[in-house]
Length: 73
Length: 482
Image (cartoon, rainbow over all chains, first blue to last red; front, side):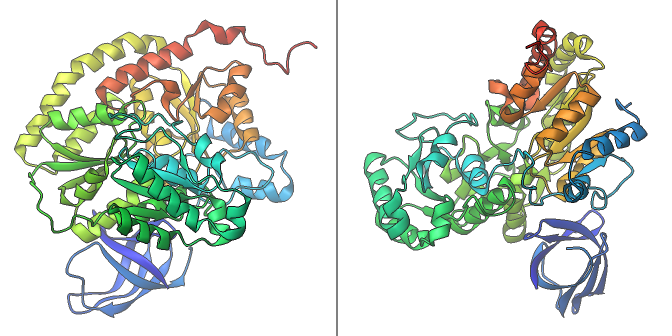
């Protein structure tokens, strides 16, 4: 589990992990509706993380705990 | 047009790597890349922010250097105690020329070394009592200080002193912020983690101090982040922003004060110059206070023009007109500088090996002078820095991460640049080899280099160094007949 920050970039969501200074675009997010948001996210660098599905945050950037599923760290 | 073709550069990298043992060779190969501007991400081509190999000569600093030397040190009305043995503080004192206005020792304290001077007994019995005593003594002798930060050196972490507890107690006693910073030198692989730790301690102990207090806002408030006022850089940047109609509320941290930092959450936009050392706090302010942040580049007229327009785009027409007015006002002067120096510098090749933002930011300034950067590299960058660098550098140029003494020597010998920009550790080697060299960490005791005013100094300095006749007269001591 790691803290990540999700912010809005020019082209959709941007993933940032402060601990490792990893910044990358989010190419896909499993759930992206106001009621249900999160789930499995896939990054531009091939990594995959899991965010507990939850109500969409009121505003971005938003810090959340995420679990690494796959890919580069 | 790069100095060497892609194949030649690849051959050079292979040749340089040849001397290493098998394992070191494998590791170092990952830190060298040949630029390909078509790339989106540097991830697959270069590895960065990894531990340096034992035995190679690295130019990196430590976490304490990143925190005390870079981020906390320049805050002028705070006192940074180098908590630990005396050497770290003494050798890190005032070397970066972070200029400030004030009377040193009365209301400003950047150039003074405050240290708890650990002795054997402090290591054995712990240094907490001594720290409390130091803080009280500082308060007695320098009553105009606005706050104190405790910068831990390695032994403090090793013996497990509780500087947080002492800081909290002392802060209550003296009624001023006392910030414990856990920036022991052994943390992380370079000074980069020190920046991060320093940013986190600012976030935890300083940033929200004035939340909810009244502040006379204007719609044009901005803060300059990551400008350490080396040789007056932040001043040269600030006047441009003010001239276009913005109000600069805070300078982080060159010539900055504690009050400025505490007021920063009220600004409309954070302007980030050194991405590497202050992106952390910018991101935090974006999340907590919804303040957007923008990276800008004030090296060289082309980049300044771009940056001013980018900044103005966040504001209304008044600022946009202001930006155009500033650009117009200074373009004549900068054109004159280019007309004067470009003929003397045209076509010259530059190699850089610095840290922070310079390896990519100054490329534009060199290009304005008709020079070409053929190789660049960072001491302590992360991959997000390289992502940005790829776009600024020419195709097939060489990029090196945490370069070693051997690699730099060999690259210079093969690429024969007309000018080298790097730090003090490399300076005298290249001087002796007869290469024109600028110490680009603190502008070789010159500056400012930011802004239009800075560009004039930059161009002049580069000309003075590069066209100095002395370089041809030097024979390296190792080539002299015995």
